[in-house]
Image (tube, rainbow, N blue to C red):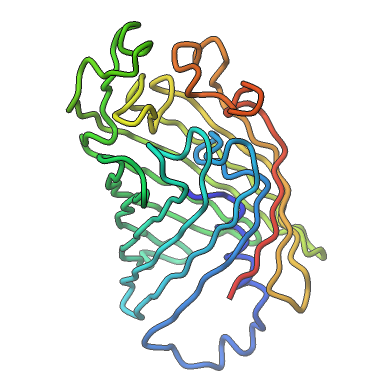
Length: 282
């Protein structure tokens, strides 16, 4: 799950294309799509990866008419999200998507998270399966992403001494990570607005990994979002606004400090916040 804004904006960009042209055009062997976005904060599963600051993001996907596709996506990072010194997240994505019924499709693939310039043992692979469908103006997606045991996800710090010194007492440890989520969206009739909502649950390493981070801070937690997208007619632009939050309280995350906090003022990077974005789809 990348930013909800980016995914929603791409979908809206496609929806803005003339229906007649889509029906008349023969299917292409290869299709290339993508987008570029500016977001007020990059939240990955509810947690800020940019120290509660703005991010520039973009990506593209090359899809074959058979259903196979390859893509990439990237964002700048700061604070907690730097994974040992990297200032960039680069995702390499591949998978297969197919219709399995009227208005229903299944999408299975793998995301490989890479952090160029970061410390060692930061990259990890995460397979996923998504089931989506539509009913009138409403769309529903249910997804499961499971990353098998890898050092990048391991709990390398287990006691107060190791946290205090920054020297792991369990180097080489491996953990897995499970993320389950659902996305809902619905076009509001006679308007360019689309309402959207998201609910997800993470379950993984309840500590710090090899680079002082964790894909599932506090071990397990919920994240959620409600918002809306505004497609600007006649352009590839979409404006988005949302309210995002998690079940991670400062008390639950106390043992992760000072890592799990804003470097500017020590505030929570998993607390409720308004998010805004501008996206151009192509």
